[in-house]
Length: 128
Image (cartoon, rainbow, N blue to C red; front, side):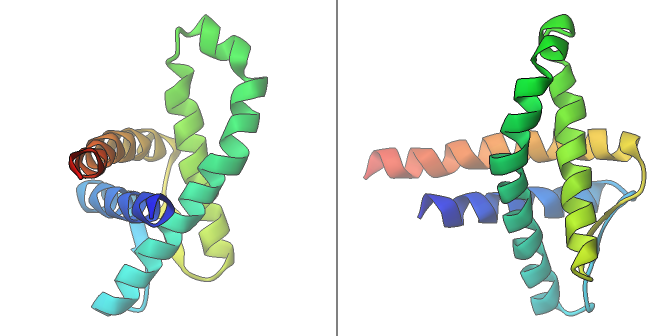
């Protein structure tokens, strides 16, 4: 259940980022169900990128994390968002990120929303 919850959290966070920023758009067939499916697909890709690619990047970029006192995390998160957009565009649907600056702000929004929603979900599981 946690994997499905994680994908849904990513989808909601990406949806909110694209609603707040004009430089992030979801490429779909303009139907509600199509948009939801694309957002879930992008959430899945984003989760896989964060699970597979991000640890490798963090390992090799460790000196930059130390040098910038952790602020390099914003750059890595933006790159993961741009990689997600590129992968989904190769599939003919998905996410479009205009600039690196937009990716940084979008990644920040996605991170904050993901943390909030993840904590809400974990609180529900702790009460049971």
